[in-house]
Image 1 (tube, helix red, strand yellow):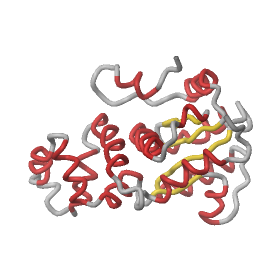
Image 2 (image 1 turned 135 degrees about the horizontal axis):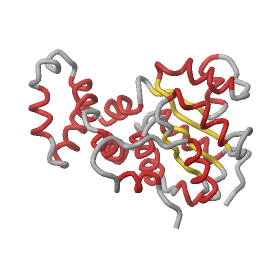
Image 3 (image 1 turned 90 degrees about the vertical axis):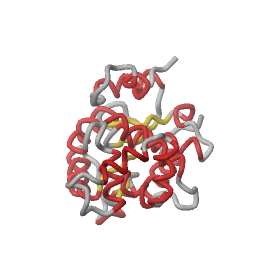
Amino acid sequence: MIPDPASAAEQLAPGPRPPLLPASARQLALDADASAVILVEGWSDQAAVETLARRRGCTLRSEGILTVPIGGVTNLGAFVQVLGTSGLGLSLAGLCDAAEEGYARRALERAGMAIGPARAGLEALGFFVCEADLEDELIRAVGSAGVEAVLRAQGELDSFRRFQEQPAQRQRSLNAQLHRFMGTRARRKVRYGALLADAVNLDHVPRALDRVIAHARQCPDRPLR
């Protein structure tokens, strides 16, 4: 049975999940006989991607697609070198935050990828930009009332109400408070990445999230399974 990096991380002692190293990602890809990889910044992004894929009727791993959290955009180049044309030769796709778009472009160019102008150039290669990040896009797509319903179902709405009363939170918008609350604990952030991807109306899925999955599945360089 192929080890799942997310499942393995859940078995660790409480605390932030350790980042996945490029060498570990390479071994996972080999063990899975992967043909394509979706590179995302963190574990919560991985949870969201895999949850939405399931809702779209796709089990990514069964199609030879891995979703790999790289521990932040500054590690993008190292993962591209190991998994892309200079390494295993896998088809690559990915997500990045809007603030990191320029860095992502430069990292891909340094790795030898020819990128066309503007954001369309990144998208042609399978890399899509989230405004401002994937959690923010999911909160807006689900809607604040919908997110609070998810909190209620998880038994955390009262905790969120107390969080809202903290002096640092009182001047923030409701969406900003929700975003911050979900990020206060590493495992909470991962859990809500999956929960919000499960709650979003399929007609209102954030564009970047939908497109990165579609690109990985349709990449012409990826052998069919």
